[in-house]
Length: 118
Length: 112
Image (cartoon, rainbow over all chains, first blue to last red; front, side, top):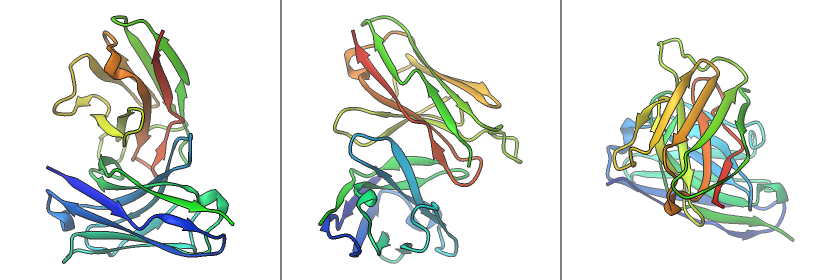
């Protein structure tokens, strides 16, 4: 059974930093790309970032490019999102998601809440 | 970016009646390999999204057969043949054919 467990969310001031983690199990982690997707309170889903299975390719939404960094540690079956220069508009529930064919997603974690507020 | 437009955004349905959600893309979702990378997700209240349909029309294991997906090119549809109480939630389409991946705005299904 695929399991994705996010952690690291919290309250941070504008301009601050936070690092999210996602622990994966139930599949061969390094065979799959991984995504971060976010959902602002009461809003829809917004794709944030993707990293290829070997970690050699990373991709970002324009809204976070230059501020967020996605990475993975395949020896630990873990995915990360380093978020710097946070803005109030980054407030959202951040989901870790498993990739499938092309840039699609199949499984989702339960999410970790990031609140950017002074 | 490929814009995914869902309609309607709100769908009140009577229990046992059918429901249909449309998802239209701003450009063709046929990839160079001939596949069409379009998924449907269900998000029940307070839960994470769950994939229902992948590559337009393939139903996931464990998904009731009252859910079906169809379409091609730029026009896609998710149908629920007979709505049940557990189907309440928000439904999203997602495309993975082009960069970046994009989602529809979501369609909220509620019981009348």
